[in-house]
Image (cartoon, rainbow, N blue to C red; front, side, top):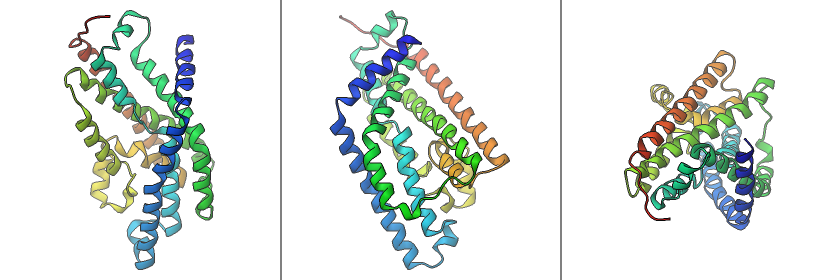
Length: 268
């Protein structure tokens, strides 16, 4: 474990060299959130039945997007998949085949060090964002939501990372995987609840989406915080989220084992 703590420490030092990049990325990420909040304000102002259709009051809808910003800062995968694919293309993974370091755990440590650095840089702008909409902020629905929300966030981060890692493994077979990554990102953006809460969808479509891992990458932890998932449904949802994490981990391992058989590198 000592070597992986060292990786996290080195990752933090490397990430903090790009503080300005993190800060600007955080500030620009709030632009679409302000746009979505303005859009929903307009919808609720112009349609008295908007709350009945969406299942959210105007205040709840705005707070939903505040939670989207928080969950994104804590769990989102930024450039890990691109970096992993670059390691494969450029032959950098050769060193991990000769040293007692597991590449998946190495990249996971870098992912968490990146999240820590990003949170440090994003804390200020995020606090300002929340302060601007402080009238809409509410505490967790109950004590269970208070404790289970962070648990679900950890599972969300792991799920996002393992899926991105498995996608990056396609670089063993394909020279350029950016198109596939963009397609996956676009689908995640819609199916995970980034663009709108999944409650606005027809019930059948929502049930179909919950057969995929995507709602567990954002919508589910937010639903825990808001108390929209409670009791037996909460524990059932956490069990499914954990199952998706384990499945994504197994798939990531599968892709590595089969991809490394295709790998070849030359030179020093």
